[in-house]
Image (tube, rainbow, N blue to C red):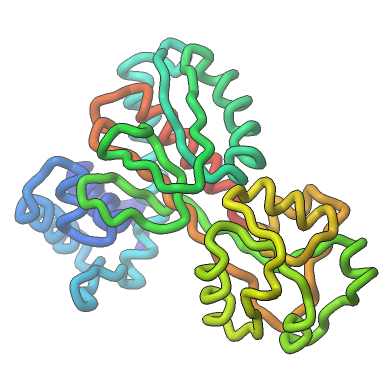
Length: 298
């Protein structure tokens, strides 16, 4: 079907787009400030106009059909154009001012946010950003932050969440460590190596065991709640740990282990509260940050 030859009702298109991003009619209705029956009617009207089924229900969630996936790519472009138009209509980015707080893990805040902030400074010079580098999940509902970058989808129903990308991760160690202790070639070899722990050691061990790796907590001689500190320990040759491939590429002193393990896939969720719909400064930062984080995906 040639989507570009069809005349769209923007309300119906927006209802479809937000439902696809939120994953359910109830969440989409909350995000748009509509009742669920109203939103459902808009989606059904679009399906009727197109003559296709856009969603199929799987349990309590909605799943895009192939027709829905085909349409979504075009609709996202329309949504981005609409957001840009909204910014122009309400004032150029250069004129929007105020402070927006963004929380992220200390590793992401250190490795990724500086490049984004440099870009934002040139595009919106009157926006001030407060970076909250914290590995604990800030409570957006209590206004501990305006925008959060998370690797798990938030469960709070009153928050707006958008899946903006996915990064891959692998196991890494320094050249010095591998020269001294040898390069593991098989999964079984990991039981003979030292590891650097991030966060709760017992939880990390359980996570690795669930992956089928023969790891015990006695192999974690160093742990830290700080991702930056833990990664520094890896770079200095203390042991093996996980890191995103995008970050590790910037550290020539480490190498990825050649193991028969699928790369870790880590989602990136951008989350904010309902003020996204009324605050120009939060809307501006949220949209620009979404575009930037999407570019990190391989």
